Image 1 (cartoon, rainbow, N blue to C red):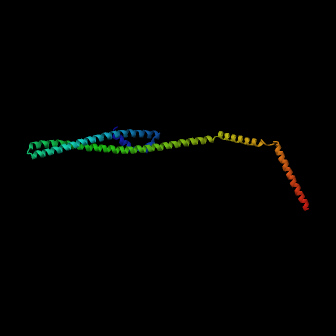
Image 2 (cartoon, rainbow, N blue to C red):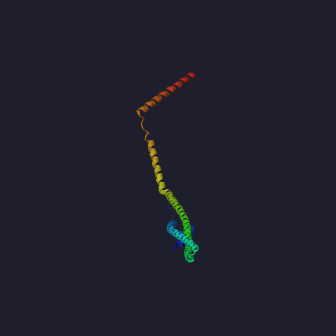
Image 3 (cartoon, helix red, strand yellow):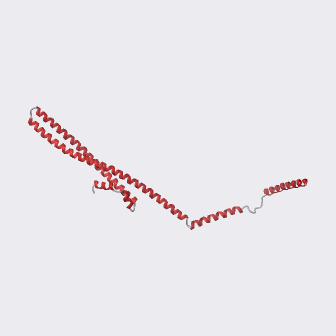
Length: 221
């Protein structure tokens, strides 16, 4: 396949349509980018060669034009000097260089057209590569989100299983037993000595307050 045919195929390709029909869009877009980049390298090399040829033809064209002009001046000089024979020979040389210039001018225009086509194709290919890379980036993001969602759903399903819920119930019962054991630690324990004296002091204060109330009540009666 010629480079221009391949470039035309790539430029006219509908990336979205191709990816929609592909079994593995990520793999396909990766292959497409590689093909585009290889073609881009090739067409840039061809463009560089065409530009070099264009410059060479331009130099030869300028030289042929200068030679034609120079022989025309020589013919004029020969006429001024009365040397018609030399003037004729000078005009013959002028014609030869002029015809050479005409040929080179045609080659130059053709080569310039090829260079312009290469440059246009390069611009379109680079745009196509950019679009393909953006598509690849979006596909990778979608793939990553899909993987994350799948893992989350898998975790949710695991959490919903009866085994996990039984384990949570077991943990809850174990915590309840620990709380009950903590409450029973001090239950029924004999008060220490200081606690007994504090209670006696409290009882004595209550007795005094009770006697005061009785005395007050009796006095009022």
